[in-house]
Image (cartoon, rainbow, N blue to C red; front, side, top):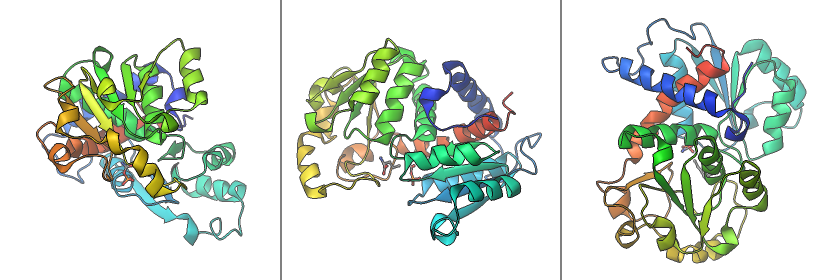
Amino acid sequence: MKHFINLKDISSKDLRRILVDAKKRKKLRNKLSTLEVDKGAPLKGKMLVQMFEKASSRTRISFYLAIKQLGGGTLTLRSNELHLGQGGESIADTAKILSTYGDGFMLRTDNDSKVENFKKYLSIPIINGLSPSSHPTQVLSDVFTVEEIKKKPISKLNICWIGDSNNVLDSLIAASVKFSFKLSIGCPKKFQPGKEVRNWVKKNNKKIYIYNDAKKAALGADVIFSDKVISLNDRVNKKNKIKYFKKFKINKELMSYAKKNCIFLHCLPRGNEVEDQIFLGKNSHVWQQALNRVHVQKSILLYCFGKLR
Ligand code: CP
Ligand code: NVA
């Protein structure tokens, strides 16, 4: 049984296998409509339980479509409607029940140890649908999108992140090690990646480039990523934090430091970190990026269910 919790814990080979499968499957769906099932219905009869402790639009809908297109079904829960969320039932008992009724479990939570606790008691695979430390399904799908648009392995590209050091960036850093690409990060000093993640990169004999100047980070970039300054789990003084990011806004001037054909990606939802002119501009591929989550998550599900071709 394979879990999908953190890109750091999955081998480069398996991550690549997932992307190769997603590419083949996406191509084969050219003529199929949204809810038509892939040939062979590889997850026929399987049920994915999704549980959200925080808001979600894309993850919720894309996992729904992903399992449907593989021939299975999904049930979406909010933890506050369960005995678990009301505080009356333990994770251990809830996990046993989920394993009794379902075949896979996707969890979005604001508590990393909850993911680990569920893993301990589940006898079905668990997928991390965003936690404070990671957003692995998003970032693996983003690697797919970059390679699809640039028509090159990501290892040959300069990837840049402008913004907060959050869960999405942590997963992007993990991806930079797993897929060996150059990652330049532009963020205020106060909000740069923590020691733990920097040490992990070092331990893996890799390097990330951190600049406290957005222009330096963007210089020569093939791809610029960004995300909201205030994440769902942020319990900070929001007004104060936003002030630090004034010089880290994605606008035309900043994009001019990147390569001419540099693309812009953003996982959504967005805040004020990017100007409309860029977000809705010709170099932005954010809608394709969102759609690709369906395709990559299908292959993640197959990996977890032991059915990856
Ligand atoms: N990008 C992303 O995970 O979006 P949602 O929060 O809407 O799921
Ligand atoms: N960093 C953001 C990502 C949302 C998909 C958050 O955690 O809110």
